[in-house]
Length: 431
Image (cartoon, rainbow, N blue to C red; front, side, top):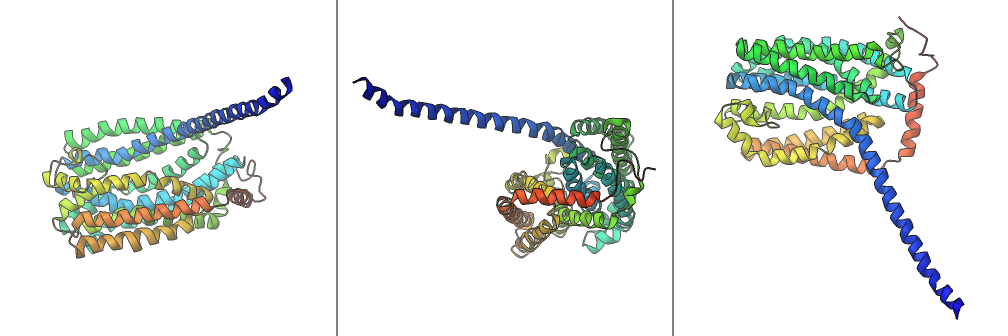
């Protein structure tokens, strides 16, 4: 009778063992997930702080200028989102090419190529800054051509000329940030940007409010802040903190510029089509009734309106579109992740077409229809843009889900080998 009892216990033991293995599997999954989350936040946390601190440079300026007057806020807002928006979008987009090449070179262990890519990007972006300075010089006629009132356009045009130096600061800053991000050296970036923000707050209050220099003071402090960022990053890199990836200036930076320019332009088109959507929205807002109020509301929608203006009408307008803005912010928390995947994989050209269709053919077109034809005003404009953002997010999710990532990894290795070529960058071409 003993044998049958032993046999009957086997399924119970097997079941228990399987449950233990399943429990171990769950625990292992949580351990892996937690480890991955910590690694992501180790990089993402300082990167987020860096973005917040750098975005706050403009926000601080806008906050203080907003308490000078509605016209000054409108001029600064339209310059920041249209004229500076052109420069910022192009420069940041072209600098984003380094996210592809530096990220893939770092993953392949080709450390010396990172410094070469950085210098190539500097060469291209400094040349681009010279060309883009023309948009700053002719800002007034450009804004008038786009339908802005003479008063806003002329004041914004003066401010644009004072802000030309920031273009060249962008040309240095954006590539070096991508260079450091590729190596996960994000904590240094956060500390540098935090220090610059503190200095900027103090100087902005002094020049704009205390010394009553208005927009002139705003231009001085904002230009200085961006150049201080450049100095901080350059000191960090040249001090030896990136000795494996930065081995000195090289003539190789002037080679393969055509191919690098192609990738940079694709990156710029991809990002600009997205970033300039807000710029076009502000331009359209300026064509609505009460353009100063509409432009101010569209310019400060991401922030607490009471911090940026004393005008009750502007604050009321922002409050009316808060639900649409909340939905936009929610989608904006998903979309950058998908765009980051696209940039890392080198899909900039493909995503540029997607952005063109979603943001302009669908988003802005339907927004203009609702805003002007259906008389829904700023709410209608934002509703259309929100639809475009939603469509773009869905398309990028599907593409990311369907991608063969093993094949993409093989293509990345091939791309790194192509960029490296046959030159020993560790010793050749040093200046």
